[in-house]
Image 1: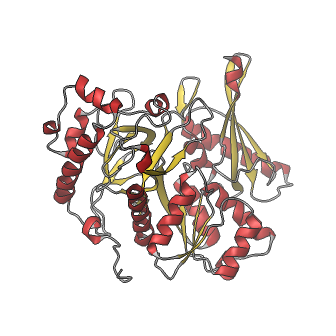
Image 2: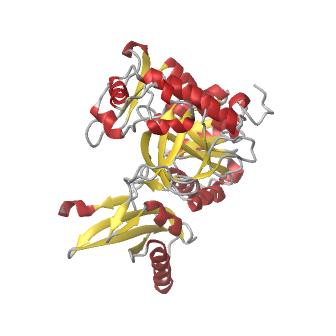
Length: 437
């Protein structure tokens, strides 16, 4: 392990586009053959008259069937396993709040490869064995906790498995243990900073923090910049999903110009969510992923429902793995209000432009007199007693939101700390219209 090298795994990170294509073809053919052990895929291949000879390039993945979250639920719990259950050593699952949860199995090789991916990401943003890594994600069925834990250990850092919540303890650990890097969801970091302010802790002077890994919930560039300004650190976007392994699928490099998706592990497609046809680079569509090294549960053309776009396929950092834009939202998170498609991230982008506003907000959709309405509640950064100033700010926020979403929401500026706070993923939208349906 050369601590001076910018690459943890240069043999894969610095592949040329031609070399990536060749490796993906080999691994896609291997994955196809391995998926024949799964009755679900074996039947699909038979129905579509597919054989491994049909795969001669990464683009041939388009010949293969899509897989959806519903397919995982329909085959619950182990119907998509490609190996005997006794070869699996761990499973993770979603909460299963609607119907069966999705269950993902891992062999020991899967866990080792996953740890390598996460370690590669952390190394890419400048972390080294001398760093102290504090993980404020929940452990257990949620992959963020154990995923980052094993990746940080694989890199060789001293790890602090702080888990979620208990901000006072988080701050104490940061100060006492000399924490230099933290993994957290963006909304929690804004709450953590508020607690630091209340406790008289200056993160720039009283801690050694220098790197944040943020993800698990959609967030705007404005939100990221606000976090960086508050703490005086660099915050790098992370993308992961349990169906692919967990965190580690995509990560920003120090250029912060998009998420590198590791194409030695995944084939990346961006498709129109309605037609399922590929869209040109630069156009927003739904992210579709095919795993190339998964042993227990390989997934072919998995529809993530996340919306993004290709930014490029080269980078000044020397890595030629495809770069994707931050997730713009999810096709299934889209709000339709009076015929207009709106994503929560659009609201956040506008709110973060006002320094008078804090980071916590809530969007509520209601039906009043047969009309759908949107109320946006957002906390003030500081107490504001000047009524005229408050009214002026409310009008300015309303106007900016209308320009962005083409509808006029009801804007309510509320005192700091009055909206619910979550220690996990933030709840940003409450749709009360459902009670009328």
